[in-house]
Amino acid sequence: MNELEFIRSQIALEYGHAAAVRTACSTALGTAAAPASAGEFLGVCANYLVFADRRGEIRDTTHLDLLRPQIAAGEREAQALLGELQRSLPIRRSALDRLAAAIDPDRAAAATAAENQMTQAAPIEALLHDYLASHAGVHANQRALLTLCDSHYDIMQWRQAAGVDADSILEERERYARVVASLPDGLMP
Image 1 (cartoon, helix red, strand yellow):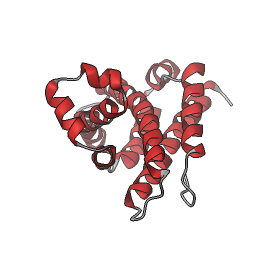
Image 2 (tube, rainbow, N blue to C red):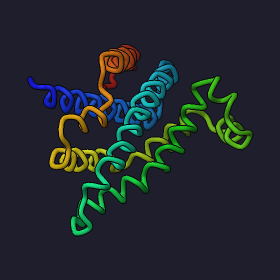
Image 3 (cartoon, rainbow, N blue to C red):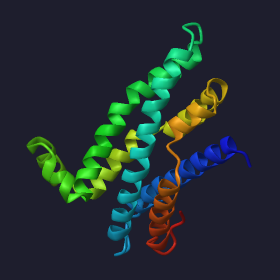
Image 4 (tube, rainbow, N blue to C red):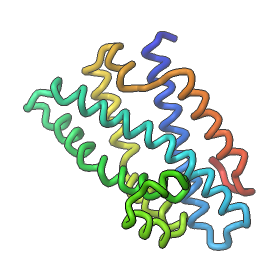
């Protein structure tokens, strides 16, 4: 496997894990008679999703910075994809920030009074619902975005955008393993 294949494979793995965690989280939230372990599970999911999607947010911002100068005005589909990515980032960031504040006391302490009031008023389940709603359609756009990157990036740009290194790989694996280990009975990742 060459370096580009490794980078793309790691990104695909991370996107797949994040999608699986979002699905399991959504299933747990939709269970009428949630098991007692569901609260702990949702907290572990929230921790994973904050980590994974902060990485995704950095990637997406870097993709915008790298791709915009390379995409010609006549490439309407590519321009539309970048426009949608640009519009979705603040919505996703806002939901992610509220979720992060709910699970991170240090972040909550640094948040503005308005953010604190809103986050304290909403249980983690409500914040997860908002977060999951903010990610509707993201997976399909990610595939199209990666295809666009393939046609415009060289290996240096892939390295820059991916943010894949040994530490991030290990941390993602550890966080995902915690999600899998905390799965309530009958729930699949």
